[in-house]
Length: 370
Image 1 (cartoon, rainbow, N blue to C red):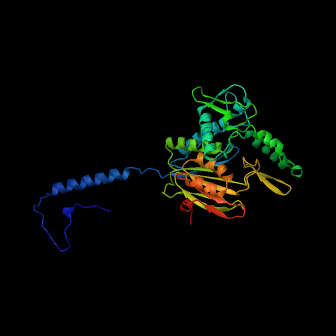
Image 2 (image 1 turned 45 degrees about the vertical axis):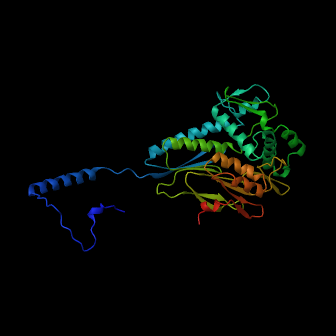
Image 3 (image 1 turned 60 degrees about the vertical axis):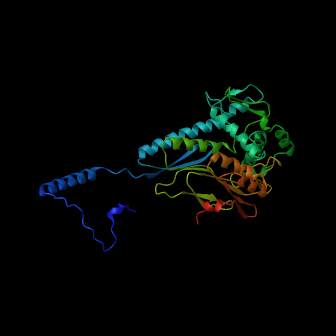
């Protein structure tokens, strides 16, 4: 809409002559024309900003999963620098949160676990931040997102890997061993000392496992860093953890497919702008014992794989919160899970129950692509 000065518009059919008439001589007209031509020539030579193009890269060396990044940038060189920056950030978080491997000159969570029951370990503040946040999520989910369950989860990992390597001999971890490990699954045994910059485990048999929150926390922090560095349009997917910055250049939201737990297709597609989408499901990591599947999401109450759902998706502004919630919600009844989601601002969820039926939080449908 073009706005025009009010006194320059007259009602239809009404003519009001100008109060004064200005004489314009031919020489002045020529000068005006020359000036306009010069300005037109000048502005015609000014180049327009380059249109952003779509670039994509895949990383296979962070968090033991496939990481895909899509971003829009004005040039291949600039996009390459962005990819390198993001990759370096994710590698740092991967090494810090790794509980299986040591790295020269770095105290990571593996180092902390190895020193359980011994002295505190000086660690990077990004480890302390993760542990503090994970403890908050344990409280929020009423103990269902417990990073002190490393002993229990390690038993399941050992039996799952043995069952995958030799399906004919696949077996379940003995309940007595699970209960013995669970006796040392107390979050209070993990102590953060912010002033000293240390992390310690007071119980020698307690082990930290951040598999339920590490990727989401790292994805959130890395995405925030990229946004602060000037990225305005990016989609990051680390396994089932998806973070977005802004929209696509044309202003349309990012579209994210939600995995159907019963096929290779999508259950649905959601659209987000600057938000995160995290999905956890029974189809991700599992093995079979006597014809029955046993997945990797362990219920702290039963010490067995949760049987409430086959898939849960959470949409939130924070990928760490969404990641923690997918695990916490997986281990609680639907009524309790819905009440928890309803109590959190800006959080929506989709549950897929074992019989294939679905349940949604009140605002989830807003994000669905028709």
